[in-house]
Image (cartoon, rainbow, N blue to C red; front, side, top):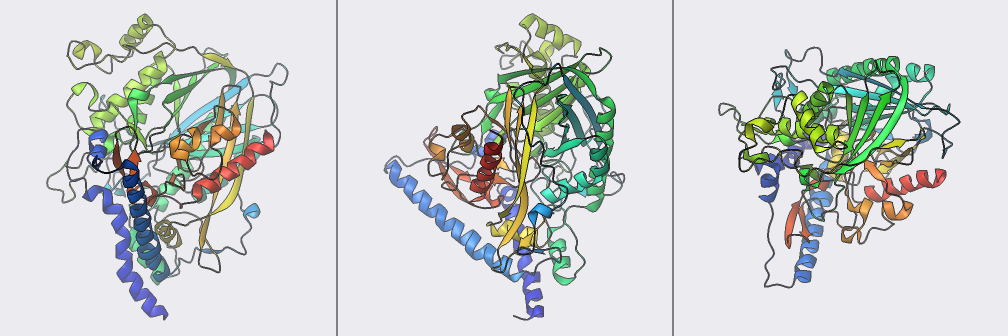
Amino acid sequence: MTKNVRKFLAIFMCICISLPLLYIPVSASNTYDSVEEYVLSSETTVDNGDDIETQILLYKILNKVSDFFINDVVAKVLKLSIPDSAAVIDYESFDVDAYDNFYPGMENFINEPQGDKVWSLGYGKASILPEDFGEKRYAKGAYLPYVYGNEMYKDDDGNYEDLMVRVIIMNDGSGRGNVLFLSVDAMGLANSDVRLIRAALKEIAEKNNIVSINVSCTHIHTGIDSQGVWTDPLGCILNNTLTDTVKYGVPREFIESLVKGSVEAVEEALGDMTTGKMYYSSIDIEEYLFDRTAPISFDTNLYKLEFVPFNANKTPTVVATFGCHPESASFDWNQDESDPLNFDRKFTADFIWYTEKLMNSAGFNFIFIQGNVSTVSSSRHFSNDELDGSAHFGAMRYGYEIGYILLGMSMSESERIVLNTITGDKLGVEEYKDNEDYTIWYDGLPTVNKTEVKPVLNIKSKQFTVQIENNLIALLGKTSVADNLVLKDMRNNYYTVSEVGYMEIGDNMKVYMSPGETFGELLFGGNGANGFPMPTIREYTGEDIIIMDLMNDAAGYVANEANYVMAGYQYNELTGGFDSDTWCLISYGKHAGTTFIKNFYDVYDSVR
């Protein structure tokens, strides 16, 4: 095939790449009262006249046929027809060990505090909005490509929200170095963009003995496009097909602002470092979460670390993690009838902004690190208490309620009533408490103990290459629509670089740092893990390990390869029906879960 013919085919066929991006919004032209209603609208029920095992087998066969057609026919033809971007690197000559800006963490783990050492922690944050935001329009990293806007939502006090990077630096006093976490208000960041942040922090890290730099995303679906596929995918493909000057999908202005904000926040955190005590608590918040797709398996706990400085003039810091897609504000489809797309163009940090706002009003710094997000979404947003309002109104209420739970989880009810009053009664208890459908946030909320955390911080990470078996994602990578570092071997297979890690915080938190959105059954086991070729995480380690997802990469969904489907149905044991499942359209491929977890076990075995 001549080069000109390949270019002609590329121009024609790259139009098809937008089809997966349009799948969800095309089927969701209505405004839904809740995420649950939106998801349940795609559920189908079982015909009880047929044997259930036969139906499950038939659906599995249909799923395989669907995957073959999508991945091995349509996507493969597209992948082979459209030329590589000039940024693609030769796989055989690539040395992952020489790939710069990787931080392996600590070689030696400890089990007990080193003498009379204590915790140190510093906190910082900065805006990541580009300087020209408000003048220049940016694409919203949500569901429709080419949805541009230049305005943030205002909060309930009339102030504009912001998109932030929040930072904590922790040290256990053992002399093994500082550990840095950055949490970014974005959908996700490719590992190569994580390394851009690390490159900007390199000198700071050397001067301050920072041995581990980890970048997580809050995973908001209403921020600036951080993954490239929503800004100008077709223009990006055409440019990188027709020229050798690489155009990346993620706007460089946003990347520059993200890097700049990250440096500012880290410098602030270093200046804020102080000694103190750390406390741990957790609480079940199952009624605030739900798993969208079978097999149903997810972590229902909210985990909290509270750092209290010895110096009373210093501000305490709360670190919160739980698995939840922050997409409460994502489902307003009919904001402006004059807009042909009928889509909300304003940006928001979803519930994160409002949880932080409440925490700040109570005198705490706040950082949210995404947990085992899987296919878990927020429940009780604007279906909460039958109050009318927009999707954004629901995100605000959800954020405040999570904030109240965080602040009050170890309090008595009388203390919670006082807390509610002094923080301004953000959920309107006094206004709505007599409504039949209204539920007061502290009614029935259990009181949990908080435990002091001994100053022991262990962390270790591993980098490796992973094959991109999903030809749609390979296409987005090879054309530089996505920012991933992409490698190509002699057999036209594509790879990228990713990372996993293991962390211990005292005896209280043991964490698998995952690069993707890990399905809960790979952590907990159960019927959803049947057919997985290795033990599940808690089975292998024998520990109550939790997951922090989207850490140092945006690898998409990580599924049991036995249940992997790009577009099909999964049997739901709880409802007796079949849930539609298209999540693995956004994944590195069928065997990515095996690759990630095998490498995690390598890390775990090296220290435990």
